[in-house]
Length: 374
Image (cartoon, rainbow, N blue to C red; front, side, top):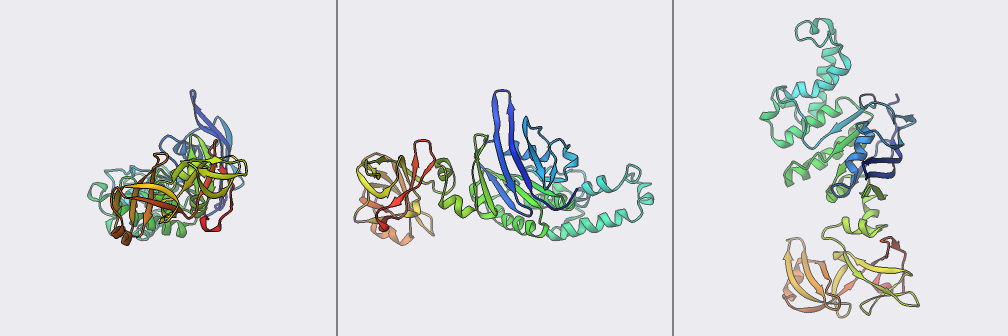
């Protein structure tokens, strides 16, 4: 089996009884690419990852590694390394022994693995394993922990051991299933950077499964947004954020969530929100969406009443109520704007950039009639 190559999932289907977990999913991961598979709990992302690993048999469809069809191959024959949320370390083994496990199992036969006789029969194989383990440990800054056991390590250190056990094999494909969810916030931020650096050094195609959209957006080359067993959109983090193809994608990506208002389309294609002209034309538009950072106070715009001010240090969140419809709207402003704002105040928020969606949730391409509103 060749070492290089990406991953292709073609029309993957999987059902558990009457519940369809995968509904004809197709996805391509380029050689050396870091792709984040993101979506809410229960959307099918872990099922898809397990199917790629060979831990779940598909009802239909296929999985390709490069030019090799691995659909019918056992997990042990797919050359895949997995990192899980719970680390899955052997508590009675040292860090060195935990990292060495996959190499011992692959490079040594049953006789060579015997405690007393094995070293006499293995020749230089054990020395090569030791060198590879030390190299992986040093790359993860845990070389000084090789003699410790998992119970003597912090959560971040245990996660690095799990990563070391994966990379020491030099696998064809990396699969990571929410590996940072057990870490505290500050350690997650630090480990994100380390994972990206590690991916660049190793160079294998990597699929990173997470429900945390901030992890996906900050780490991945591309992001695949999955919901209800389907891939809704695949693209760069910038494209997913700025040009969502579906209202569900727009609502899932971004914090605070995108603001959504019901809209009407006039006979001439003008899009109105409770009579207010958005400045856009888009046939079939029923929803008008705007990111919080695209709303600014102005002399005219969407009439709102300020209900709550949230100071975040680097920014200010205005929680408002759109008076004509009662819909909640959130605006993100610079912190210095706090001086001129009070709870209960009536004001107007002007959208700098709006997105249109139809009744089916799909994006409606718009034409801006007023450049000032784009």
